[in-house]
Length: 233
Length: 233
DNA sequence: ACACAAATGGAGAGCCTTCCTCCGTTTTGT
DNA sequence: ACAAAACGGAGGAAGGCTCTCCATTTGTGT
Image (cartoon, protein in one colour):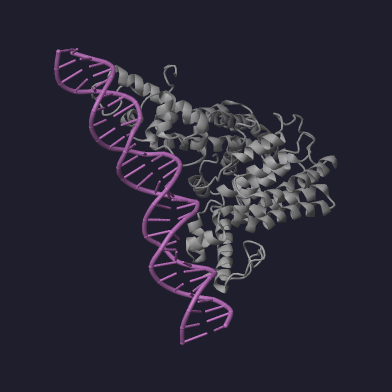
């Protein structure tokens, strides 16, 4: 069964109401098992897995899972708050890179790499379907930094002037879905389209016609994310 | 209720076994109602609607729907074979355009426009989940022509040499999913990313690094389409 | 107008999936 | 040894979809 190393986001040992007695040793052991199993199953199969799936993977009964985590959202919060924060860190890292274009590309490519490696994370990033305040709060810290990265590269004259800030999350979302299409058949396929898109984003002397249609507003972007559902069977 | 103009793909009046007596007038009327309703509901909401939804939209009982069309696939075949053939026609039209690049763009943009206008069609194009032999046969006629369009533009020196034939359906599939994300919030948003992608596809003097990763094989492309599911709630 | 067969509608059965509970049993800590 | 914590998983609840069937209605030919 699963080796019980600490999950990266180890919640305190005494889950539940504050200042209550600690769990028995077997209960604590099982709680860790459940977290570890949930992590693996979410990563591999996405957030749509059943509590039964998690229980089986953990080698415990489903009642045990519910006892410790009365709903799936709590598992998701426990496990993904920090993962989403990694995306934030990636964006902040991009700001430390001197070349604005390289900083921008570093962020865009890096978050797609994280998405490619973790299906649950990808689903959290491109949809509003799961998670609660903690994950939502972590997620909302991404956009302002991403916009900084974008604006920096545009003002440096590398990204064409007719690209709008909301085009970036639109690109991220779209490439995120390609990550899912090809996750099993060819996990790196998205890199080709990313490269094509990046080349298309750069200022080019021959390109005369501006981008068509109006860019998304942030409200429209939110609306799009609100109706996303897993794109995989 | 729905005006009973002919659906574009009007099957023969005597459905069912050949050489049987014709339907009564009310039955024939209802059959047309069902086809029209299915057409509208599939176009608007995609292929995942229930038979109940179609019955309600047609203003008939669900038993009536099943009597005429014992399974949803038959409705899909009856309605979409010709629509898919429109994509084929679009590709063939592209071949009549003298400029290879314009011909290629005409096809790519045109089929995305059709997808944007018809959710059922989009689902058929990017997934293997629905339809039977007739739709599949029509669909399989697209790729050879699309490859011709692509190869023509590449040999004319307009599309960069490191783009592979399978990159085109990959792009189409990916942009097709963007069509869905933004269908209600901003139905033309995909045009921006298409323009960016097209600019990225063009030969550019400054672009030195070839596209990363291997292109998809056709088997991998098929595999990806096989596990697609509706991306919308 | 009438007889009869075609056609109808939609409630409910059947099946599936997921969430969730509960109680006899087991395990643990003191 | 004993009491309380913890367990497992069968089965209930709820929701969703497909499909059938029978009392009733309707169309058509004579």
